[in-house]
Structure formats: structure tokens, C-alpha cells
Amino acid sequence: MNYDEARDALEGMFAYDTGSICSGIHNPSLKAQAKHYLNALSPLDQRTFLAKIITELWLSDQALESGYGPEDAYEFLRWLEDNEMLIPKEGQ
Image 1 (tube, rainbow, N blue to C red):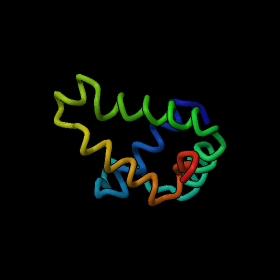
Image 2 (tube, rainbow, N blue to C red; image 1 turned 45 degrees about the vertical axis):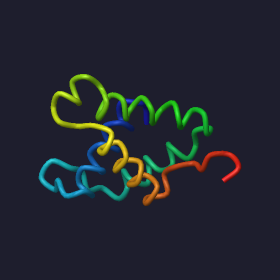
Image 3 (cartoon, one colour; image 1 turned 90 degrees about the vertical axis):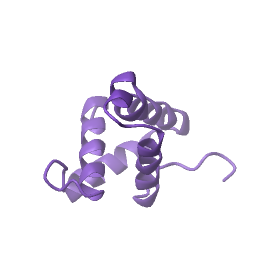
């Protein structure tokens, strides 16, 4: 799985799990692959990867103009945490 594949998978699964069943992705196998991909990254690499996704999808100028924003990024991070896809910061 590369960056684009992981980003698209996470975006689609997040959309499905938060109610966009028509445009989202429901694929438990893909969710397991994405979880493995994220958990295999070092804490720094995972933070860098997620910061890039969050910026692209919810905090870029284009995303903000489309009505997305920090609250969407927050919900995405909560979804990741609920699905055990986040590495806790050191010391936690």
C-alpha cells in the first residue's frame, strides 16, 4: 500500500463509517490492511503521514472553501483512534 492508496482507503472507510454509505467504502479486509500500514509506521512517520492527509482532505484552501475544516479533521482522528489506527504519543 502506498500513500495514495492508503489516503483513498482511509477517506472512503471514514466516509462510510460516518454515514456516507453510498460514496464510502465498506471493506473489512481493506480496513485491516490500512491498520497494518499505519501501525507499521514509526510514530514520526505516522504523524507526518496523517498530517499530510488531514491537510489535503480537510484543511487545504480548496477543502475549506468546500465547507470542510478542523472539526472534520478532529472527527477523522477520533475515527482513527476508535479503530485502533493511531500510535500513542511517547509517554502516553
